[in-house]
Length: 41
Image (tube, rainbow, N blue to C red; front, top):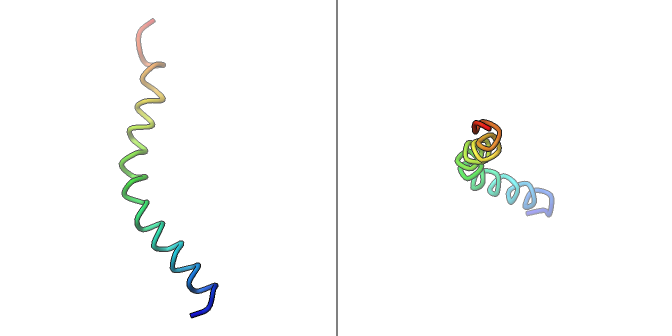
């Protein structure tokens, strides 16, 4: 297996592994970013 194909496999595996984490962290980050702005002054 060449270096390029192994690198592509590693990137693909990392993206598949991290996508659920990113999908679950994105709404939390969005809420954390907007919560102070949406609070009444």
